[in-house]
Structures are given as structure tokens and as C-alpha cells.
Length: 513
Image 1 (cartoon, rainbow, N blue to C red):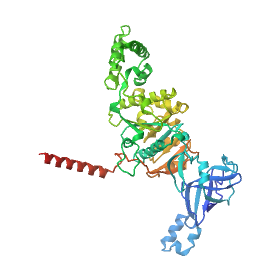
Image 2 (cartoon, rainbow, N blue to C red):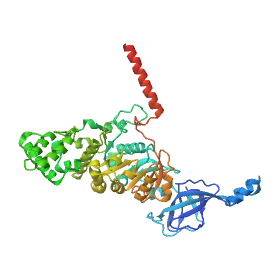
Image 3 (cartoon, rainbow, N blue to C red):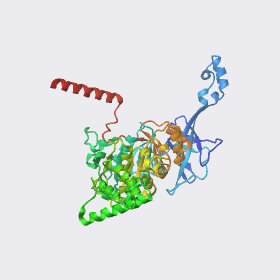
């Protein structure tokens, strides 16, 4: 069915041109900023996005005239046919042309003034925005259009994704929706594994049976690993692994460490069993030829030993916990030490990446909450242990099916190298001017009009730009199916729960006495 016409293309100082088309909205037409429209074009159908709307009235163009007239007690509406001269001007950006052969082309010359404008059809939008109706991930609904935003898995994640927003704008909610789509995916559609580094325990509800019958239960597809239960097997660590955890190691220290590891591994193969980090320290200290090097190297190893992370064997096998269609949550919420968090993230990411390169693991996406803490821009290597492997996956991971998703509320503080390799940006509300400037500079798809719209986004609204879509798309995030995080309660509810708990404890104590 043909869409109703909403306006007519007009001539302005700047257009119509291949980059800018303005149209006057007719009396019955209703359009909104961020909405898509289309018009007939010599080569097919031109699709445009409305960047701005401007209402104009000739009678009110000169402020001094309006003031003078109104100050004498005369109303403009009573004396002149004001409403007849009022009109709404829609300013649009042409996105592309759907040719008669079904191809998508960039506009190369302007449409003619007088061309009739109509609301874009769903068929046009699916084609020009790269929506995947059959197998796409349903993340939300296109604003002002009756159309689901369903994005192709490969286009969204293979070249990496970043989710950026200020605190409280809905990052965790959107991430939960993305996880649901990955977990609900059918085997025949192609599934990947998801590994989430949860710094605040916001996603633990995925591992718990749903208490509310209206919520979907994902506990059978989720593995929750509290950080305090993680133990790293010392014999599994190579010299390169230790160098990644101890960025300050010198070349002589690496040489001596390699000799000690080689000797202990030979003994292990001979039947002496796995060795501990303490045994490695003793072997390093036994090196008579380089006592000074041994002393400083032992100090580095002692620092690691004090963290109580290293034992003779791993507490788990990645091949047992990283599976297609499954979510593995590394819960770091109990960790106070940033260094421990960095070491755990670095170790896991290195294992994930290299085992995927060897095809021992399925394709995966590693989701990093508070990514600016793990890969901070400008930080020294000893304070950003996980940064190097994050940047490595961002640069090389797409070739091996190793994807990364960076979540941050401070993109300005996030590694520029990692952020630049994320070819799709999911942006919720951002108001910090420094972060906005950084976003505009790092995302090619964000123009000045889109940048202005980001600050006006409400909670639950998002802008996506990059590889997953051809052009910027504003949409409403769909309602989540899973139970909400325990952290997602109001301050009033948290206060009420606390007082009720205290009162109950007091009553129980009085009954006991």
C-alpha cells in the first residue's frame, strides 16, 4: 500500500543537493526528527533521514515589529491571517538510493524541487539499513516506524562493538537485551559463546532461576564464576604470560625466568608433578650466575604469590565453560584490588584469544564492563595489564572469530586504539562535552545533527552507527525478557528493604531472648 504524502521538496540556499534536501510539511503531515522519508528519484527511490524541523511564520520574522505591535495591545492573530502563513520545514540528509534493479547507490545529483515526499516504507528501510529480518538480533524498535531493529550477528560483532553512555542511561539494560538474543539464538542460525567480565555483579540474575513466571529463565544457559573461586595453574603460564602479568620485567629477568620454567617443566614431565609459584621462586633464587636479577625477579613473583591466585593446577578448563549459545560470567564484583581485576581479565582474554586461534574454542564475544578501567588511554603498562590483549583482540580478533564488546561511560578515557577498532558504536545518552567530542571524532557515522540528538536521548533510547547499519539509526531498546539485576532498584526501595530487614532481625533477637 502506498504511503501517504507528507510534504513537498523546496528550493533553499543549500539545496536540494545530493547531501541536503528540505521539504515543506503539508497540513495533514506529521513528521519527527530522526524519522525516515522517501521520494521518487530518476534512478529509483531516494531515502532520507530528518535531521531537524523548523517552524516558520513570515509575520513573526522581525522581533522588533512583533514587539511594537503587541505592546499596543493588539494581537497579531486578531489582525492578520497569521496561521495561513505558518509552515513547517523539514531538513533531511539523503542516505541512499534504492535503484530499480534492487541495488543501493549513493545520491550523485539532487532531486527536483516539487518532488512529493512520503514516509519511508518498511521494505525500503530494511534494505538501506541492513536489517536482517530472518536471523537478525532483535534489539529494539525503530522510532516513528512500525519496524523491528534486527541486526545481523556478523555485522554487529565480528568487527567489534562498543556500548557507550553516561551512568544510568541504560547500558546494562541494553547489554542484557543483547545477551538474551545471543542465548535465544537457534543452533541452525549459527551461535557463538559469550564471556562477560562483570565488575559490579549486575548480570548475576542470568545465572539464577527466574522467580517471576513472566520472566524468562536463562540459568541453564549461564555459568557464573565468582572471582574468589578462580585459581590459575602456574605450570600453564609461559614466560610470555608472566611478562603480560608483570609488564616491568627486563630482558635478563625474562631470560632467567624462562630458564627456571623450562627446568621445572622438564621435571614435571619426568614425573615430579605440577609445580607452584613458590617452587618457581625458589628455582629463580637458586640461579647463582645472576643474583641481582634473581632478587628483583623473585620480588615480582612474590607479589603475584601474595594475591593467592596461583596454584599448581587451573580451577577450570576454558573448553568446559566456553560453549556455543552459552553465557560465561566472570564475576569481579567482590574484587577490591584493581591489579587483581587486571590480572584476571588479562589471563582470561589471552587464553580465550590463543585457544580460539588454535580452534580449541568456539567463536566468542568477550564483553568488558567498565572497559575504560581495563584499557585506559595514556596509562602506564603496569597499571593497565589487560590493555595490550584487549587492543590485540580489537586489531586481530575478527580474523579468528574472536570479538570484543567494550562498555564504558567515559569513552574519553578508553584506549583510542581499542575504540577505533570497534566498527559499530551503540550510543545511549551522553552529555559530557569532552566525551561527545571524542565520540564525534572516533565515529565516522556521527554528523553534527546526530551529535546534537545524542544529548536529548532518553533512557531506553539508543543511536547505532557503523558496520551493523549503513547509516545512523535511532531506536527504542526492546523490553528485556530476563529478570532485572538486583542493582536495578530505586533508592526508595533499597532504603525500605534495609529497614524491613533490620526490624525483622530485631524481632528475631527479642524472641530469642
